[in-house]
Amino acid sequence: MLKGFKEFISRGNVIDLAVGVVIGAAFTAVINAVVEGVLTPFIAAIFGKPTFDNVTIQIGSSNLLIGTVLTQLVNFVLVAAALYFFVVVPMNSLARRRKSAAPEEPEEKVVTELDVLNDIKTLLEKQQSSN
Image (tube, rainbow, N blue to C red; front, top):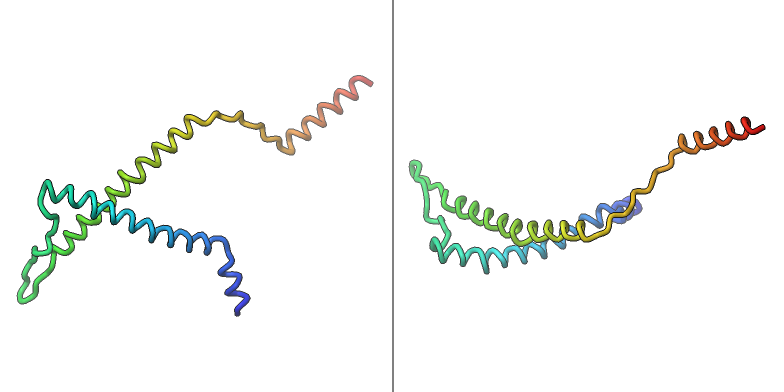
């Protein structure tokens, strides 16, 4: 049982997943800081504080907190915008620059078994014709 657990833990994809989760958690803090420190104050300066927490719908004696859902939806859009404009766009731009700056390597011809056999056949035919 311990051997199976050891094999499971030592698989590369489990370690990669664990590293990805840890990096993702740390990166979440960075994105949240951009949202809370840059985007939210920017939007608050233009539109006022972006919260809909007081919006409710009353059905009978129950209050549906629709505003809480709307606030979280706005927060989601802000996080998505922060990711896109502060991470994805710069990384795509950097990748394009690297690709255009890197000299293209000539493609190496892949030699297959059929190519080798054809070369051998050609050499044998040349030998037979010269004899």
